[in-house]
Image 1 (spheres, rainbow, N blue to C red):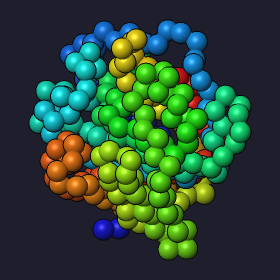
Image 2: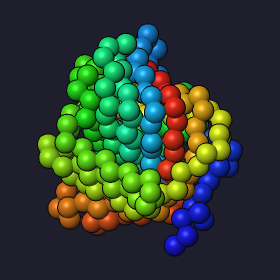
Image 3: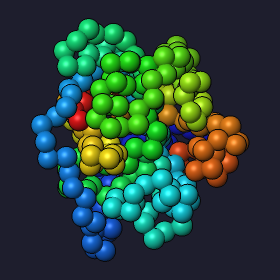
Image 4: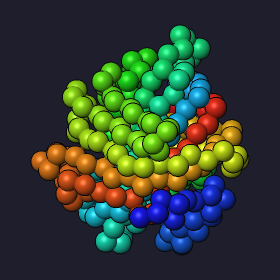
Length: 256
């Protein structure tokens, strides 16, 4: 497969989800209370590479993992979009504390924007990070974030290859691998909202990227056949026919 066939500009990406949401909105949005409080934490990311993959999984499998107050993008359809995001940053600083390199892996279901904001909204099913400060802040906020110091993030620019492995203590374990092509063309700003319901209400994790460069990718996720992730995707592997990207950005800010 020619990975450039999967290239999607930021403009087209936004247009895709806007049209998707408009169609779903005709059925009525659910009432989901946004986090109407000052942010608990602010996280600065610097010099990052990022992969984004959007595939399709059985809606009934996802529905059991996402509270009914959140409307799935594929609600009422046989399949619904699932997002797998990985990122490695040269610098991660939580609330202005010590800057250190680190990795993040997120898996979530695409949802209709609960509060009408963001270029994309996802419900967080699994969240892994090698940054202990970030993991602790998220846990304090009620988010089920896993601290996995052994995340293996191997991007080889000379060979255009990417391999990301989440081993134990991460659960479920997974590996994402394939080929990628970075872009040097600025594509503008992007805002992603990731949500999770907690005992104290809904937590909204908003990442704003002021200037992103969107490249192409051809990636496959693999997990153990008996894992919760395999049960979700319906097998050991999943590809990403909807969207595949390999992005770079100099800075971003997360608030939750």
